[in-house]
Length: 231
Image 1 (tube, rainbow, N blue to C red):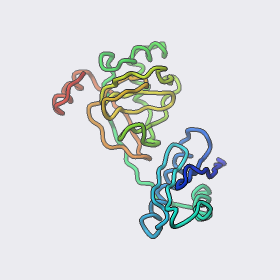
Image 2: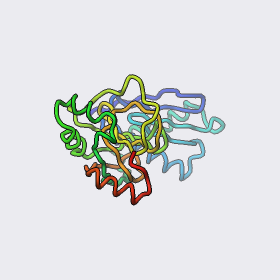
Image 3: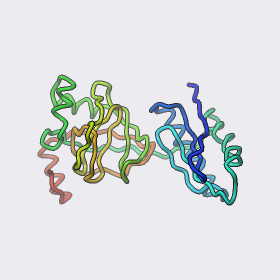
Image 4: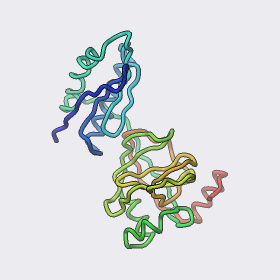
């Protein structure tokens, strides 16, 4: 697959490396690989590179303007990016797989019934479709610990709510188009909520996740063990 990229000035001390404008697993893998490579450079002997922030299809780099100009940063980065994109760089990406238990129950998930109606099937079918794939953690954002994962089965994909809710409970499992996520804390949010998790690990870009459907009784037992409320 041909992978195009460009530099974009982001701020007086920041440069963006922008890849093709789509959510794509291969592109994201290159972003994560490039981030690891630059973070290694930063730790070793690079005084000018201050911070590396990866996203779905871009990488934001903050640099020390007292050490170098943007033109110098571009010249230093271009061969590194070309090497990663071409596949010549074999920097390993550390990742983990996680299984997360989710209760798909209408009383815990405000949008589950509506998503089932969209699917023209049962809530059980929603749970089955959502828990079938192995999801890739693309990036973190929105709130600390909020991991954007994909890709959701095409039959389940729905847009965000036009008006976000003021309060989405902690642990809510939700979807928005091809993405899915767990709300790490109670907060406003506009995604379609289809389930609830009690416990989950800290997720990192490059990790993979599968969801395991559990009953309401199992969910309540987990809540009791964790000392949390189920509503």
